[in-house]
Amino acid sequence: MHRGWHGPGGRGGRGPGRGGWQQADLPGADDAAAWLQGRLPDAWFVDAPDVTVDREEILIVGELPAIDTEFPDTEAGRADRAAAVAGRISRFRESTRDERIEIARQAEHRYQRKVAWGARLGSTVELFTVASVPVMTRLRQPERIVLDTLVDSGVARSRSDALAWAVRLVGQHADEWLNELREAMAKVDELRAKGPTGNDGA
Image: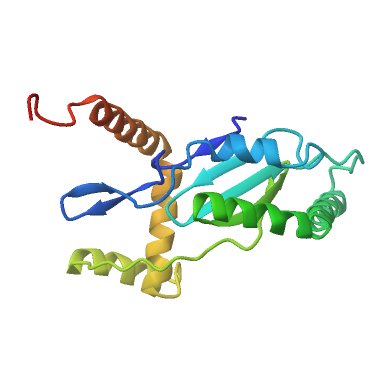
């Protein structure tokens, strides 16, 4: 599984502006994964962690060492394994709390973003205190009807929940397309950097 940096914009993220996609006024985060790999204790994770960056947050999710105990493939065995995984993740969270706070403080100063943590053990992923950022938008009636349908059907509790659900669904099913879009955006940045910066003879 690939480990490393994931993010929509290498130089601090991008956001839609009135004239199109605008560069956010934030420090660059291209080296966040490398900085964290050097800063994190070697014993924490079995490999370099996944590091995801956007304009508000840096999320660090690392793979914990596997549990050696064999559990029978029964309902009780699966329940015991789930409990063991939960216990291992809880132990990591508690035993590393103070050092994670210090690393987060340093990273927040360097990159001007909040830092959140998570741990993965097998197929189980648990995120710790991640940021919840409000996003304001205006929707026309057809889009509002979609959200209201999700609310009325019990899929979501509110329009806000319905919008978050829809965004997660798009992310799950359009991951390849979103990655291509991010790569195209990065290429535009490279071409802009190579372009002329002023008029000759000025």
